[in-house]
Image 1 (tube, rainbow, N blue to C red):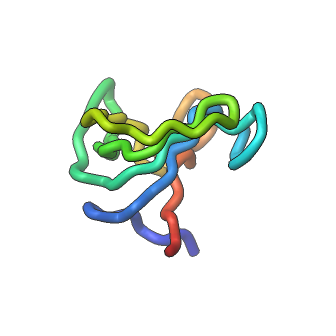
Image 2 (spheres, helix red, strand yellow):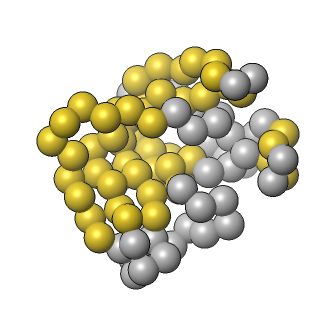
Length: 90
């Protein structure tokens, strides 16, 4: 059973819908903390304050305050069902 993501959870949000690679040239994602939920473009979305960006396998630690708004998991989407954000277990 998938865990429910809540405010203050640390998460990883993948940029490419069919790829969850964490290293190498195909690694594209952000990590951060869920600060809120909102609705945009008809989808319920996580508000994530980004702490780390990985682009083509290159890590960038964020020093500015940056937010991303990926769709909440489990919603119907034109590519299937949204499932691009995962809880980071520490």
